[in-house]
Amino acid sequence: MPVRKAARVFGGLIAAVAALGMVASADAQEKKIKIGVIYDLTGPLAGGGSELQYTGAKIMLDSYAKKEVEGYKIEAVYADAQSKPDVAINEAVRLIEQEKVDMLLGFFSSAQCVPVAARVEQLKKFMWITTCISSAVLENKNFKYIFRPQASGDQFGMIAMDFIEKNSKAKFGKEPKDLRVAIIHEDGAYGVDVAKGNVAGAKKAGFNVVMKEGYSATAPDLSALVTKLKRARPDVIFHTGYNPDITLLLRQAREQGLKFGALVGHGAGYGVYEKLKEGLGGDVNHFFNVDPISIWLANQKTMDPKLPPVIKMVGEEFDKAKPGIAIRSAHVGMAASNTYVFLTEVLPRAIKKYGGVDPEALRKASLEVDIPEGGTMLGFGVKFHGEGTPMAGQNERSFPVVIQYVDDKSYVVWPKSQAQREAVLPLPAGTTYSDK
Image (cartoon, rainbow, N blue to C red; front, top):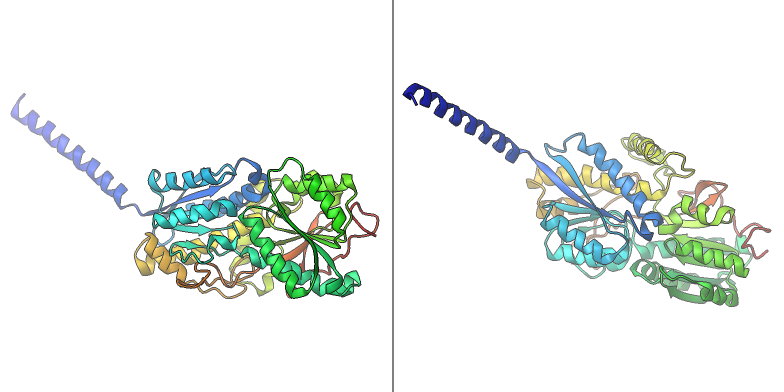
């Protein structure tokens, strides 16, 4: 080969290699945070609220994927926990070790969160819990890298009891000590924790607890539980369950003629109105549910003014994804709001103040979050209990509300500061479960 031609070829090769190096360098310099997102997209928990939580989180993550946060791109990697704790653990580890995510976000079931949180902490990775409420996830664990802006299960159980106590005399014509209450719950971490709050609240109110019993959410038959409820003759039933166990219980209750004055559910399956209506028809009318407030029911007049447009965006995107839904589930807004708090409060602070998105930077940024009441789409504020406290990583400013389903609409009825209307108590005479 002539010298000049060889020089040209050699020069071309050098230029090509240099160009490739520039591309590689540009790729290496691209800043992003890779978020592993885990919800139940299949199995019984999907219909019990997890798939709706996924939808809310995805709407928010998709919105931020179109823009950067302090120069960082958002990349979400989704995984299906399949309604199984062991799968949730395996997927969490896979996302961390194989997909190389910087953090984990999501999680619906407390039975999954308890072991997953322990494993993620062991791996010294950051975990942002949007949903699962059991106190057992965080209580006395002193985790450094696990944070939950969501209300905890004992708060659910306590506010339900407070609501009935304050209405006992006026609505049931009975002093609290004469009111007969039954506490039933699925026997996983979620149900046990809420029931613990129910028991504490019942003791504080002075109720006559005529029955307290757990059951497996996967039980094929709950008729024996219904028989016990019939014998106990409660005025009010406090129930913590997913679905299809809720539908199974109440269908068998209808068949066996169980009567009561009110039913108060606690999130999860009770937060998915479409599934309740599908399984129980008009019988769901006047049931109560305890959950963080739906972002579409929250008082926007007392809210940070930048939030109503975000709520509007989430609603529009949800309507596109799930057209024809009668009531936008609180589950959607719950995950959207808690994801938004991470993207707008934790992430920018971690990058600007602590130099990036490693677990230590995200941890320090989380501990500095200080949002007053009205500062989130769910109405409550955010301030995390610090290290060394019994509930380290738990939002101390969160709270749920009591809503009632009335004629295919949902209304906040408790606490009074958030109430949109007076509660209908007891069940109207002539309805399926009414004891009147």
